Image (cartoon, rainbow, N blue to C red; front, top):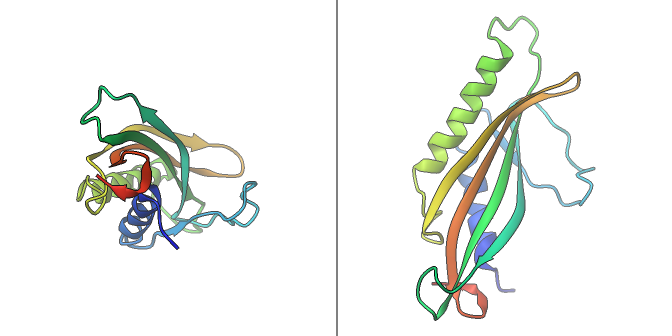
Length: 148
């Protein structure tokens, strides 16, 4: 079965983030995320949307896209930890950004990867960081399975 370029990009992000010490990347198989059980330092990888850019963005024989990913890093209370929660969130989000910047081409499938936003999330049930990343990539015209 053929694999579309966007899936290669998703797999690259998952592989890269799994190299961070104590991080496990989760990709839900359900729309309601019912199969996801957040745990400390887990990162939920979701593809939010793919924007098709018009033909003014490069050669006419390619399709150009911006894919927006959300990387939600979970932080939970750890008994006896002297490290403040916001510091742990900052370390986790910084580790995510550092790893993503080691190869902004996502293994050669993208032109660039840009971190566009970092949010800290605090509520009664969960704390964490939400990193939004946009991956700019191209495929052969009319063929989302072939990188260009």
